[in-house]
Amino acid sequence: MTAALDDSAALNRNASAAADDPFRDRVLDGLASCINERGYRDTTVADIVRHARTSKRTFYEQFPSKAECLIELLRHNNEDLIANIRAATQPECDWQDQIRQAVTAYVEHIAARPAITLTWIREAPALGMAAQPLHRSAMEHLTDMLVDLSDSPGFQRAKLPAISRPLALILLGGLRELTALFVEDGRDLRGIIEPGITAAAAILGHR
Image (cartoon, rainbow, N blue to C red; front, side, top):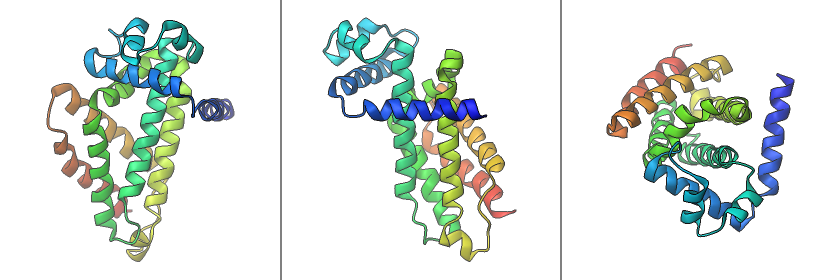
């Protein structure tokens, strides 16, 4: 556990150090365009730099490999997801309304970048140990978010305790798998909203 946390902290430190590099952002945008166009597996570094309008030399100055570039892109995506959900959820609202706000914000984020989301769920695990810090960090921060949201005034008024971390992980895992199935099948992602709300209310409201 300690080693995993150390890896997660190192990932965040390295990301912060490079956060303001415009060339790095261009490369990440290039990979995002490639994933939307042809998927991660069929994307080459040449494809990435073509979309980024830069050179392979610039790419390798920023990232040692295509896999490391993907890990950084997914880290950014997960941070945006969490920020969007937090911004959309109003702590003073009734707890049921907060659940709807959070699930709707989640679906809106996914709908704006379905290919990248599917890559996170399906492709990143194939990277093995290289992607483990990313996955642990993402799930830790998503869990933190759920704990915080369920400890808001709206939940407190209903005398509902903050969700436990194990239950938060169960909820997140089910939502991720449902999301992957919807994206793979090309279904309207708004169809996730009501099942997501029902599941979240069942777990958060009956403890």
